[in-house]
Length: 150
Image (cartoon, rainbow, N blue to C red; front, side, top):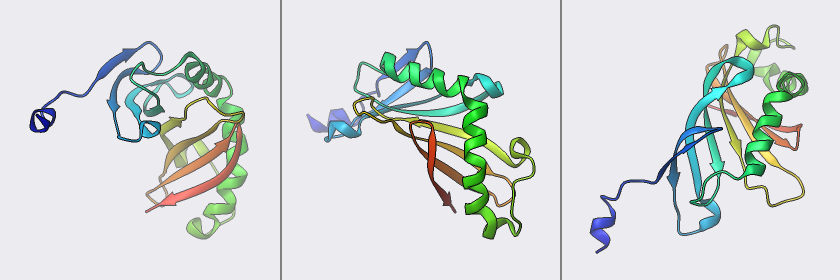
C-alpha cells in the first residue's frame, strides 16, 4: 500500500492572501508547511511564500501578520539596511548600500506558526552585486541576523 502513496498528488489550496499553495507534510507535523507564489503589494512583484501550517492552511493570524509586513515594508526595509551594511561590508568592498531597491531583489518571505509570544520570521533577497541570497531573520519587526548563502 505504501507504494501507491508515492503517486498521490500533493494537497493544493487557493488562498485569498497567498494564492495557490502546495502542502509539504512530514512525520514531525511541526515541520509541515505550505509554499507558493503571490503578489507582494508594496513592490507589485510576485514573490515566494513559505507558511508553516497544518493541512487547513494559513491561519488568520498569519495572514494578518503578512499584511502587517506589507503595511510596514518601508520601515522594515529601513531597519534592515544597517544590519545588511555591516554584514556585506567585506563582500561589497565598501561600507554602505547605495540604492537598496536596485541592489536587492525581494525573493521570498517565510512566516512561522503564530504560537509564541514573539514572531520569528525571515525575508530573503538576491543581493545582485554579489549574486548571493541574503536572508534577514527577524523577531517581530526587528532584524536580528543576516545569512549570506553562496
